[in-house]
Amino acid sequence: MISKWSKSSIYRLYEKLHLITETLRLTIMERRKFIKNIAYTSSVLAIGSSNFQYVKALNLSNEAIDLVYVKNGEPGLLFEKGIEALGGLEKFIKPGNKVTIKPNIGWDAPPERAANTNPDLVSAIVKSCFKAGAKEVFVFDNSCNNVSKCYINSGIEKAVIDAGGTMVNGGDKSKYQKVKIPNAVKLKKAKVHELILQSDVILNVPILKNHSDTGVTVSMKNLMGTVWNRIDWHIKGLHQCIADYASYIKPTLNILDAYRILRTNGPKGRSIKDVEVTKSLFISTDMLAMDVFACSVFGLDPKSIKHFQLAKEKNIGKFNLKEIVVKEIDL
Image (spheres, rainbow, N blue to C red):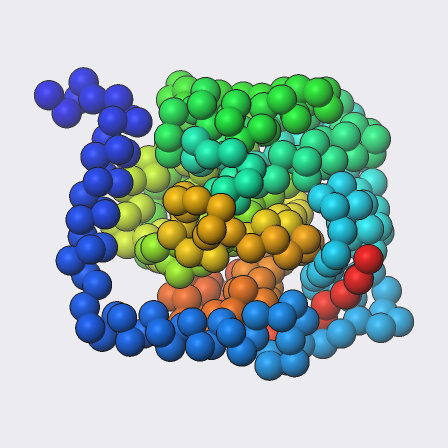
């Protein structure tokens, strides 16, 4: 009976059905669209391309900056210089705070595959949290594959433990609490992990990558890993549920890993051939601004991503690139 199935078994079944659906959906029209996207990507692939316009922060204070974009460095240094430009992590974490870090640990894959957040970045963030005065630092994700294998093979579990943080099993259903989502269109209720509801500071740490359903996965999409009933989002309408939930959960900071990015076959990827090394990082308090800017850098038109448009309607953040103030740092 279905009631006896494990969450992982249901998700594996969903993945198989989804793969069949995607194959059937690959019509001539979609092939043309794919070719068009490749052409667009080629034209804006270079980081910092002039093919999309935004406001560069020159002598503005860190309070006026919407997003920091750091490139050409290793994960730890990228974060160090990026958070420094926003006034330091001490600006967001107070002594004694309980901090929860939510990376992408959804897949049983090694760091080189870029399916999960870079473990070196997660390590640097955990260490910085303690340095800023955090009392406790927790890390978790409601993984799509086996939780233990995802935590170990992503390299994140070891990175967190070595840095003094605590890994929490995101596959424990008893840790999720039912909440109501005010003003939601589709996602009226959700079972949210208690760490998200009880922490003083939430650091959303996704990885920039291709996604078969949404086109791209960035900060708003990454929050799916904080709820128990994620499959329900696909049934109700994935894009609307992403926007609904983003109107409810407001991370303190969004730190986007773009050291390695998954160009194709996302969200899991198939091999390192799908990966491009760009050695970059984005940091922002504005999820929508982050997603829009990163999507443009990734080579996609933000207007083509439905949940961005829906988030704009909910006033979640800045959508117009020409209004996003970006501090660029080239290491």
